[in-house]
Length: 103
Image (cartoon, rainbow, N blue to C red; front, side, top):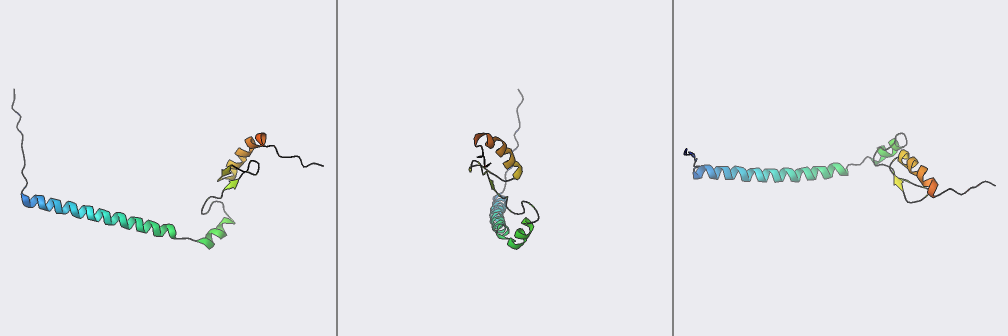
């Protein structure tokens, strides 16, 4: 059998203290950065362009938040798009037929 040689490196107490200090600094910096990111994200989320959104919504679709469309047949289903609402209504018409308004 061959004997396996194990090489062990011993760190000085000074080196261990420096490594510990570096790691503690890293942990503190990481925490500060994460806190800053949360703070900045909240500030960005609070930025509103109400007048611009209102103006653009007259000319384009889904500028800010998607508009919810509610089914007029079942009065339950909602969709973010007219295309989704049209697909739902095709099936919903069979379950909830519109009353005839012919005279």
